[in-house]
Figure: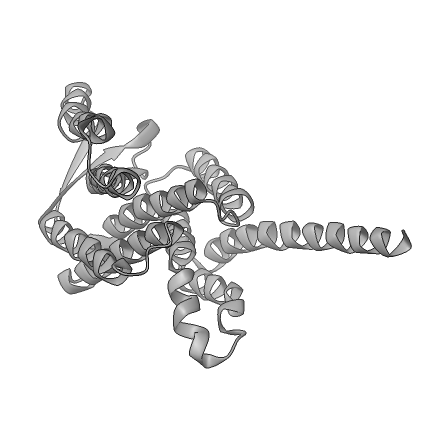
Length: 270
């Protein structure tokens, strides 16, 4: 009985340490960006926090890097969003709301969503990485060369597809399908680079949501539903994909019309 109490005590303490370190990481990123007025120290801290990726033999490094790409994309996106919140066009009152909201969302990612390994959670992880990765990329795209944007889109597509396919124990075609989805996103990224439309959220000028992020998320949902239907039924049934297609149509066609009607969209040509 004493042994069991010791094990439970250690388990509780390890959980407390784990939670505290993750909360401290989120707060430290905020403080670094505020103190240095640069995203690079925060990116360096995020990279340092992934030290366990390389705490194995070198032959496992590549596999570990691939497995942690989704988490890395979300973490870097968090840094980009925070850095954008400290731009001059965001007033102090709005900035506090944005920073607190982003920090809480990042803590939720670190503590509740990222550690889960069930298929549904892994799909959600990939969806979050796809959305925030593309959104943060196109918040910076006007300052980046076309080649960098296209390669970043390929990496986001490859890593998110691989993350989902690995939850299905896909081994035969995981590399091909991941690269195919990466190529698809790279092509979409090339098109979106030349003309991007964003929406000002909550009436805050500094919080711009690029339409491309919503578009690729919806297309990704359709692709996932097609794969899931074929995986379980060996065919793609109309009922399996009809709802995602209708939702995508609403996002791509109907939503812009509504937002244009109320005059809250911002068009940005690159």
